[in-house]
Image 1 (cartoon, helix red, strand yellow):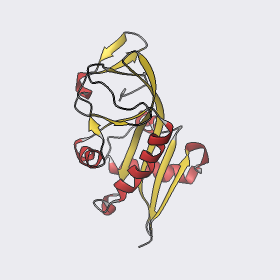
Image 2 (image 1 turned 30 degrees about the vertical axis):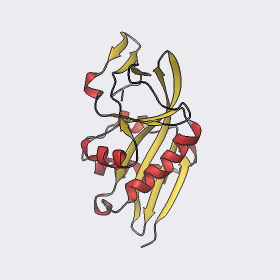
Image 3 (image 1 turned 180 degrees about the vertical axis):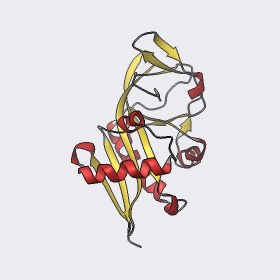
Image 4 (image 1 turned 180 degrees about the horizontal axis):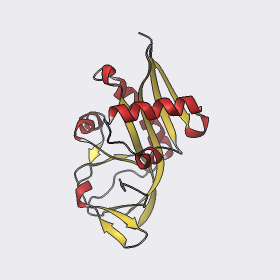
Length: 180
């Protein structure tokens, strides 16, 4: 089986490629993937893995702002990671993450993501660490709002900013839908 890995910015993906990615994500998340989830993964770099059957895996990294210790950092936020059902447990998620991590490590102050229980194993095995501190978002209406439901599922990867002190909270920029 031939495996091809490609990275491309959203602007460089064809409508057919975007449709294939959306279809993969809809199927992988079994009805729990909406338009706002889709929107969160646009505007950044995508890693696409194709096999002989077509698109087998995808992930994206988009820029978000995260405040830590009084400083706003550029965060490479990983979104929309999925592997086609028949291709899981074959290393394709790791191939996607390797491409996204290359982008994070060279272009961002840190990497962040919100992990599902299934995804957490992959991310931990690749050196992503659960954030042990508090997680907040900057709400347009209520200011800084704590997100206790995201504590424990928020993962970080040190990049250009170096290590982060968990005594300082992470405050993520606001976005529609799920903040994380």
